[in-house]
Length: 112
Image 1 (cartoon, helix red, strand yellow):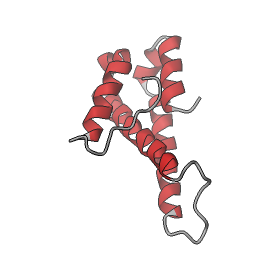
Image 2 (cartoon, helix red, strand yellow; image 1 turned 180 degrees about the vertical axis):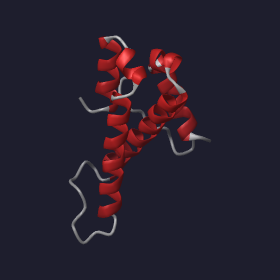
Image 3 (cartoon, one colour; image 1 turned 30 degrees about the vertical axis):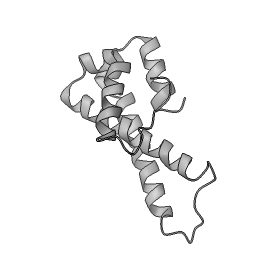
Image 4 (spheres, one colour; image 1 turned 135 degrees about the horizontal axis):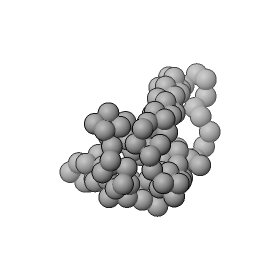
């Protein structure tokens, strides 16, 4: 997975497509993951794709103005995505990966 990919809105199930790609791209993680770690990674993949979609939808402009009712929703989504990143970074499955696999997950899903 080179970069989080967005699925065309016409896709019957965009989330399913994202997760299928992630499971292929991060195969070693998913092969060895506990059920809880799999759930956390799946949630991170979907959350990161939503963040990318949000940035693309706004043309990469900054956060909404303070008076914008969507601001708190966007801030909450960013916070939840950050929490998911930390959950995956701190899980036993991630800790057991070799450095190159960790680096790829970090690069693609953790913005590093």
